[in-house]
Image (tube, rainbow, N blue to C red):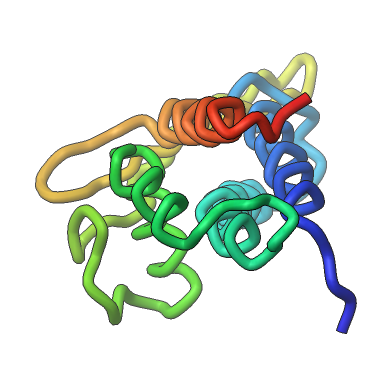
Length: 155
């Protein structure tokens, strides 16, 4: 099995975020809309599991406790956790970080027939509230950036 670094996982997460950005802002509609949802799920899985890479890679200098505290301090990272574990295991089987009913819910598609561009807005439901999925993604990535900057791990 190939070993990687936390930086590789961070960059992978950023690439998934770029795909999510395209989906949210508009991109050529060149595949089934189920693929867009898969990309959104992939972002949340990779974003949340950056935590595992950060403490598993001793080069980061971070402890599991430090990383877990950062996740707990961010509603957006906790929502990522529930979404990631829900899609990974079909349902949340562990203690949820926000709510056992956290899920990627309603999707609104906008298709510009003239240009062939599609845009999709995803909603996250958790604990009786609804959130914009792309806003969660943006804030979650910003939370990781702030945490990494605090620990002088970003250039």
